[in-house]
Image (cartoon, rainbow, N blue to C red; front, side, top):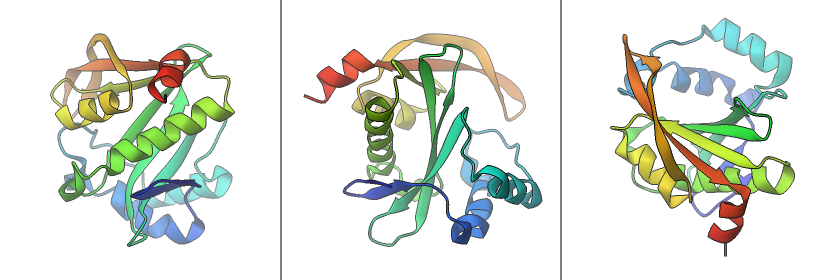
Length: 177
């Protein structure tokens, strides 16, 4: 478990599963930047039973409010194109909590964790160019914009551009000072 001032970043527990499935599959909360694709509750339960949403290729955590102990988001990291890189993905379930610092703190906790326990050299965040909130999170956590992947994601019926941000281990060591 990773502890911050606002939130905990932790693995999903069996007691969380029904709530988590409902939150993840709430289509209106996905907004315009997330795919409307969702998995059935049965498939999600089977995957959770098999591996707890943790494999060598990816690891899923929930973001829990420190005071209310409610799950407010999800954060994950997974393999990318290169062996020394990981991509971080995140989602806040309730947009009324946007701008309160949960996502920034969760990303920073995960970044610190990944660089401390893994030989990973590079972390990436990919986000829609219009997703100002996500861009601000990446920048606050020390990620630098590298460019745009043209029409790289298919979301809500159309292809969209994606901005790529990266944080190298050396950047992180300097950023943490």
